[in-house]
Image (cartoon, rainbow, N blue to C red; front, side, top):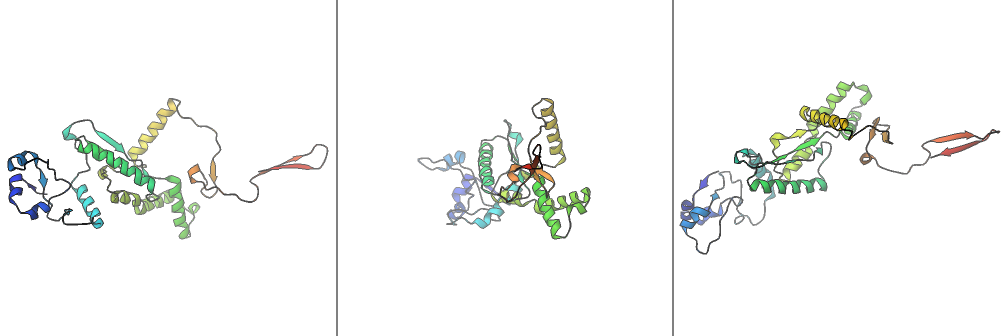
Length: 270
């Protein structure tokens, strides 16, 4: 991207001024506009040869088809990476990792918007600002979708060894696990994608184990006996968020007590 000095811009035609990058155009209003004053207060960047940006004076309506092209240019220029050469206290936001099994919903759009506002604010103030993106493995949900995929091929999870099933899970993740990442990029989130993390990466897995051990040693977490939601299909416990409640006819269990001195019984059921 070429930079143009004030004297050159003032001598150019109005056509050149209309091609200025509106995102990087700064001019302080003065009662009288003179080249001498402009030399100290004026800084502009001419649009690149590929016409990455379009001046609002030329385009009367916003062209949404250019969003992806502009975002890729931002990323290629390294604008989302923190600049530690400036000094100052770093400002870092670790993104709440979204599940690799799903797609964005309004909750994701809200936190992406709020965190992007914060990271851009501190970046514009000159602080080294870093927004670390990532995704979550969503173990049970991922297992469910992989089992459905295997069922379509006529394969049951029990037919595979643990190593074979794990391999199929990783294959699925590599093929379908980037949906949310691409959607976050389309929102314009200024993350440093060179630092993208996955919750099953070796470094993160080690950090999680270390954190749980320290919390356990301090007595802050412990193993207890609780009622859980058991999935007969997945053969594992699932969280309340994974449960869909419904009323079904019949009984879950019953108990039969013999009445003393006779052959009759009392039934208790639920």
